[in-house]
Image (cartoon, rainbow, N blue to C red; front, side):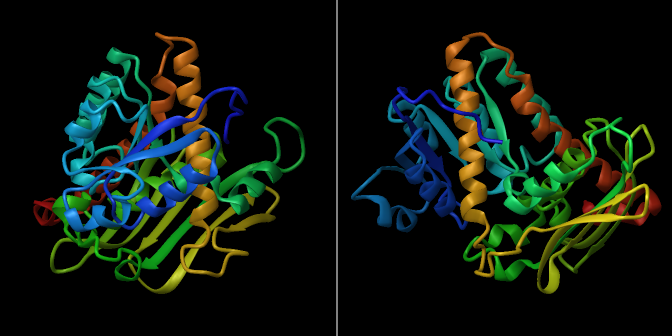
Length: 334
C-alpha cells in the first residue's frame, strides 16, 4: 500500500512516456497526489501531444525527454513490446521507473532490466493496479492470519473477463500478438498472477496447468491457468478477452469450506471507474520507493523489481505449459 511521504518534501517531477488509454489515469493521479507534479509527456504521435502542449513539456522521443532534465521519475506506458527499451534507457539515465505490466515482453528482457536496476541502484517498479483496488485490499485485511488457529486460506480464484475491443480505445497494439506479447495471458495475466501471489502470501507460486485458446491471428482470447504453492495451496486464474461485458473478481476459499469474495468492479459502476483510485495507489507506492532510494543512496532496489519479474516468469510458464500439451501449440506461437 502507499507509503507515507515526508510532508516537507517537494513534489517529484513526473514524466509519462506513452499517451494511450491508460495515461489519463496516471496524469490525474499525479495531479491529485501532493508527492507528484506532472511535468512532461512523450509520444511518437504528435496528435497525442496536442492536448498537453499548453501545460506540459512535450516530446516525441523518450531519450530527449530523459536528457531534458525535466523529470525526476518516469512512468512507462508504451505498448508492451517497447517496455524494455524505454525502461533500460531511463535506468541508465538514473531515472526511477514505474512501468505498466508486463515488465517486458519476455523473461530474458525482464532479467536484463532487473540487473540494470541493481547495477545503477535505480528503482524499477511494475504497476499492478488491481492490488490497490479497495475491494481487494478489504479482502486481504479479512484473510485469517497464518498460524492464528481457525480456518486458513486453502485456494484462490481470480477472474479477469472482458471484451478487449471495448477497453483499448485506439490502442490497437493490444490485438497484435507481436506487440502485446501474446494476448490475454501476457497482458492481463500479470495482474491476475500478482493477486494470487498476494492472497497466498507465497512468492514461490508455480504454474501447474495452462490451457489457452487463440483466434486466427494467434492472439490469446481465453485462458485457464492453475497455480500451486510449495505448501499445496492452489490458485486458479481465468482470463477472457471475448467476454460479453466485464467481470473481475477474487474468491478465496478457506479450509472450512467458507469463502471470501471481492468484486473489483463493485461500488463503481462507471466504465473503468475503479481505475482512478487504483492508479493513485500505484503512484503513492512509487513515491515511497523513490523516497527510500533517495534517502539511502545505494540501497537495495531488488524488492521493487521482484514482483514484476515474478509475474513475467509466471506468464512464460503459462505459455510453456500450454505448448507442452501438444507440439502444435509451440508452432502456433511462432
